[in-house]
Length: 425
Ligand SMILES: Cc1cc2nc3c(=O)[nH]c(=O)nc-3n(C[C@H](O)[C@H](O)[C@H](O)COP(=O)(O)OP(=O)(O)OC[C@H]3O[C@@H](n4cnc5c(N)ncnc54)[C@H](O)[C@@H]3O)c2cc1C
Image (cartoon, rainbow, N blue to C red):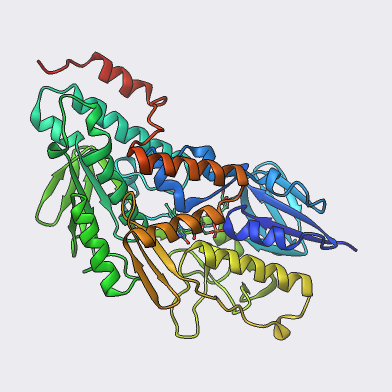
């Protein structure tokens, strides 16, 4: 009988697995709670008004439309019934012979979930749009304020977490509020703005060599970012961020620290790590079920040196292709080769035309690194239309230094509050 293969998640891992099944003689069902594949590495550009949501997302259905063996379902998986080999969704249930789970991760507040209201994280398009509007609304509020103490809260931006997302976000925000957007305002200026990047560890970007981290830190400081290392956040509330020995009054906090995996994985009744990731076999299958695979951010797998594979797109994509390959071969678990991650490098941007890249032991910085970063990101964007649009937006931004996507359409109550406030004399 024709095998049934279910893939949960149409992100980097799930989509790579699905594409690998092109022309394979089986029924493939890909289930995702959204109808689009999201290119998360460019989310911060949506959050900082450099790109629009459609530039970094593509409908999964359209990506897989030529694959006749594949059905795309928009639904949310709520449980996995291993005994009856069924995936339970909000609307239905799907039986499987093989299951590939690629549900990604979300941000973790280390048990302080109440902080999320004031310190949103960046994982989804909605998160990015919310953050974008929050930044734009803050600038509009500050422009109309009479009280300097209040104004400063709207012009202070705090990013918590010094990994690649925090670094990229801090650089992009500093560029907006210190350089590119301030020309458009009359009552506020760049000297009034503050951008903090807070990291609990002694350094930023722990996955990068020390000298690249030093360069990134210097680049951030040149842009006007105040980097606070060895600094723990002890509270987040409506008025700002409390550190051990300082309170930063702010209305703009962005959370870029910590990851956790969906509680959905608990329904697998298998071994999970502290963050909720599934501890998988070297072939990415469950410890106690060789026909169920977990890949990408949701999987916990260590390399030969005992280091956990990082939660990045190339790991998810390689794992997706590998897991699909194993399913296609149909080998028993003891005959399968282990998954081996091929590290092709890592990179992060700092502002408009600077980046750091660490590729094959080689280090690149500055403008050249930024060009490499641009080319690689354009190459991996999912559709030709997106590639073309993003290239055009970046060229426009590079020449004009203007962020184009600056409309405020949400948050009607906050908009009304700003309309009703007085402009300074
Ligand atoms: C802001 C940001 C910046 C990043 N920058 C980089 C970078 O520069 N370079 C890099 O390599 N990596 C980067 N990453 C990490 C990278 O995006 C992830 O490692 C990668 O997306 C993981 O792929 P995945 O397939 O495991 O999960 P995802 O790509 O997150 O896909 C998970 C999919 O599962 C779906 N889903 C989740 N739960 C359910 C459910 N219950 N039912 C149905 N569908 C579900 C989601 O809708 C989503 O489509 C970044 C991540 C973020 C958030």
